[in-house]
Length: 257
Image (cartoon, rainbow, N blue to C red; front, side):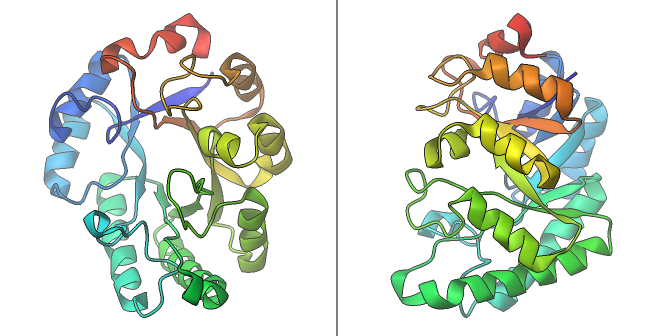
């Protein structure tokens, strides 16, 4: 059976972040994920996880200054020290909250820095993978489409596989977001089948609006059927609900399991 993890950054936004854990439990979830938990203390988050009998399965590294346009630091020149600090912060939260996976956003690359971006990315990922391996953590890298984040460095699944092969670290895996792969390449199930051996986490949303399955053009019935038979990991619900959050799980009640 598919194991769904509701993303507390994008869902239940009708209430403050720390109240979303209770909402997740009330809607029947046992697993959650989030993007950036760093505005809240470890103790605050741990309290809500324990109180609501939830496990957090994924978080992101600090992305830099989001308000000023940062979307990750891993390819940004002259900020490697800041990146390494973000790795330490992510490890601190993940180990304290028993979160096994950390998504490392690549970042936006300018035309002036495009020639050096790959080398910086590889060096930073090697550092992140080596440090996280000491704590039994897995680093996730995710191709993100350039419609949503113009200039994003990692924007092709073949590029992501090449990065994984070059690094050769067993605790760096592919985060496969069906929404992004549909926007980038189309036919995401075929690409999942091609690269399933390096996938460490899945996320879902429908195209074009990044809303819940069934709200767009993707054939999630076929996707869920295939994943139910072949995939043992977690599936993150990283979508923006159409309507109220608690009403956006009709696809799940109708057979997403």
